[in-house]
Image 1 (cartoon, rainbow, N blue to C red):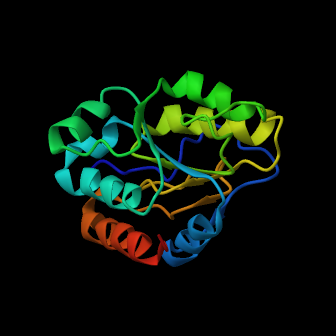
Image 2 (cartoon, rainbow, N blue to C red):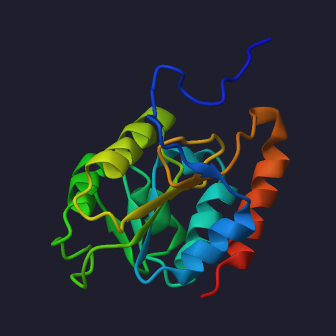
Image 3 (cartoon, helix red, strand yellow):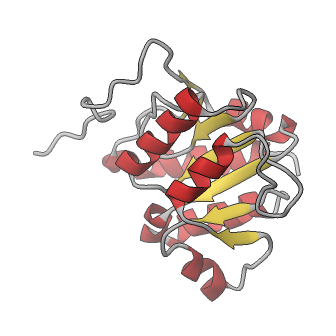
Length: 179
């Protein structure tokens, strides 16, 4: 039997680690953000449910930065409302800059939600934003199935055999976002 690990033990998050938060709490923070952004990756393509969750979050008025080849599925589903294709590494560098005008030209984002990004990529991008962003007002959250210590808030670890629980958490999150 293969055991899953809660987070990459080779990644040292430092003295400040993110809080584990339930979906409703994360949803209330997203609702209170002035300029939230959902950053998605290819991991959400493993099941249409996960893509549908991203679309439901987008329908709440939250723009989506689709990284890697994830943008293709949004196009195939016919959802093009505020979905922008962007390279994850470049996007992270832009988010660090308080003078960046954002994907829509209206300014940088204050709350960034990471979802469906390969764990080790997300971990490094979250670490960069946590430790090197010149604008300390950029907050990050992870709604992936594994805890991310470099995010300000994160879901708890949800192992593969608990897929139903993870889907319930995502549904609760969408329900709790006021849009």
